[in-house]
Image 1 (tube, rainbow, N blue to C red):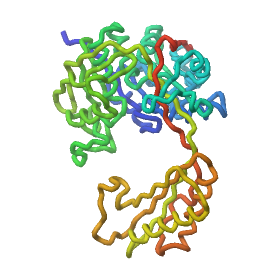
Image 2: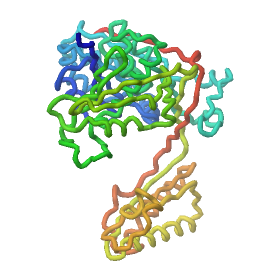
Image 3: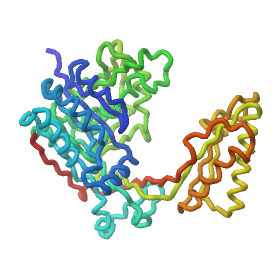
Image 4: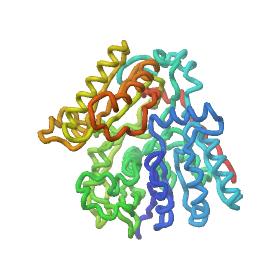
Length: 456
């Protein structure tokens, strides 16, 4: 008898990914789940700002029209969805999906699970007062140092609440800050009945989730191994986990789609965001990536086996974002002859004028695009006279005023600096707020995930 398999299709790798991917994953062949990953660290602060301006917002807004498009197919094909599109307002996101489903005549045919409990912003003062320093993992500083400027704070929940929602009959699970890997591990735990302390299988599900969390990056997109030979990227097929109860699985894609599933390409995704490969820490387990065994199991099919794991830690990672200051970036394009020399002269003139105005910046960074912007000093200096060079200057300061005044100084160089400016990209630059990242740890006993159901 052929072992039962569960197919989890990666359909979004970030907020802004290809909107055709979920539909194509749904109709391109048999799948059991669509996994849509929307969140990154800075995304949470963006969503928190949106929610502060409008309490009905704070989630990935393009998720709603996407769901309007695919809801009838989800119901008819009996495919379930797990997603962290809920951001900092998963309840509002779920209600918006429910409203869309009712308009489509799907009342009574869907149950939406809502996972909350990750958002700690309203609890920060109580946690700090209770002795939880939420010290920065990089610097050791206590969060109290920047508390007035904190814009978002979210614990990374794991797969457990996703499993709970599915067990209670959810067809669509909408979460806040659940880990990217938990969105895939949850369905596998639910379908196969994996225990919460079955560390090897949980590690396997974690590796599966990590492999597809960035969408087509595992199926030919951003492929460094041999990118020029990846076929038909315009029609790229997103990756699918084909999992078995014993923890082995394969990464595949739908037939007649572009891209490529190869050991080399999958390996590139595995080392993405990798620290110690022996200890890939998630809320669910600690996965040992050195135990992974990969085998090309056929065309566009990579088999995974041998994965081992260890017990989860007793703490959640907490992602905080806080206001840091202001920045602005301006560009000018100089043409041949002497393009590089002109750009360097313009930079010197600009810096002299800023100094003459008495402006103070934390950082002034200059790049010469076409010369050293990608590789910095490693690029060396070009020997030939380049046809064009883009001067790109960025400044950063705790206060807005010097940044604002910088934005007024770069444009005049078009006429009162070196000759042959051919492009002023985007007009006069505008000051932007800087959102900085603050990683911390928190005792798991201080965080309680909550699962509610919304009936359509």
